[in-house]
Length: 443
Image (cartoon, rainbow, N blue to C red; front, side, top):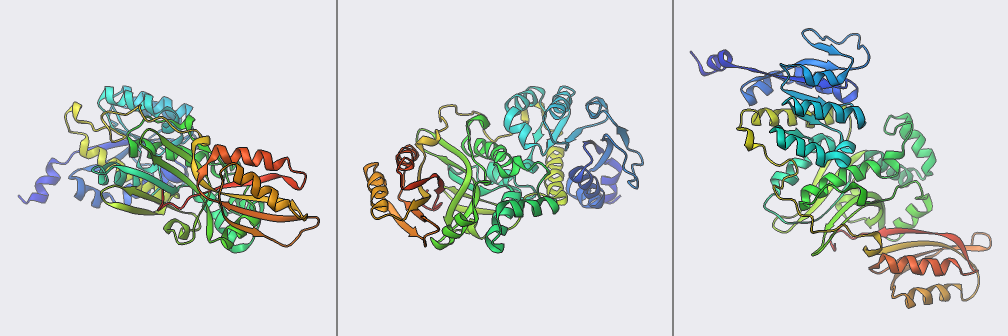
């Protein structure tokens, strides 16, 4: 008997249940079918979908041999299911399903970054107690295998910092504003029409989605607890076309970044629109693509680029997670590895407040065309210890002139204090736009 025949004779099926049959769930279902032979060759056993949880019917989909459940939480109770895939999104029902699956000894694969960022400590603790795996590669950067690279490929490194474009919707909007010279609202409407942005785009444009992802990334990079509630989170809805054009003239592009930096006694975790040099690798990432740059002490800088969303891209990460779980399924109960890559988590690195951030700053003001107005502003900045890197003064628009100032590195508290004083000047029309500048390679 050939080795292949023996393999077929002894082959066992790993049974999975898929909760949620939308864009990602259906893509996973199809990918498992399309790649079934290749998956079996890699694993030595087959993966079979035995149950799907969905609240509506899907005419035209062949569910032969698949148990359909309207109540997705019942998937956790099906005896033959080995792995539950939570692909619904949301938090309440998703958490109920995952906790029930863990309690019933089932492994879990999820793409739910919001749930893990906000409630992951409880979920991971329950999984460790039960001796099961919770895998979540698809929760960060879609199809880019970034979690695996950070947790395993860079495990011998001390991560100094990482910075990433981790929300494709925001990146699409900023790209189109620059290339098409269009306002935020117009481009947002296009993003919604194309399906890149939801009807309620708050999670994407206000940085919440990116912050959920950065929470997971930072925990893996630095071995710290999940601390979503301590992140500084700012969106792109207040970024104007003028800001994008002025940044371009100064040699920068504006990107909506998630940034995590390790300092000797603290970490900084922030999501906000950021001016970065046009020469930076991240500055060339346009449209809906995602990219993350990591600075590690041994290997130096590395870059991870690819599709951050979409059915098949996300399904690629989900199925890869399923295959990793299958490889661990027969290990002894105590052999399950730490989901965030650290057996001992450090709580001794507090998260910095935004007032402590050390950045350069872009300030856009509208100033009366009066002799001495600029001198007054420069004096206030100087008295606050803020050096000026560059100044752009445009032609007068009515009785006020646009003025753009790029500062040297300074603590944010000093900048905020100076802005407060400058805003009180009779020659300055409030509000003053402030954006952070990050040179990345100088971090």
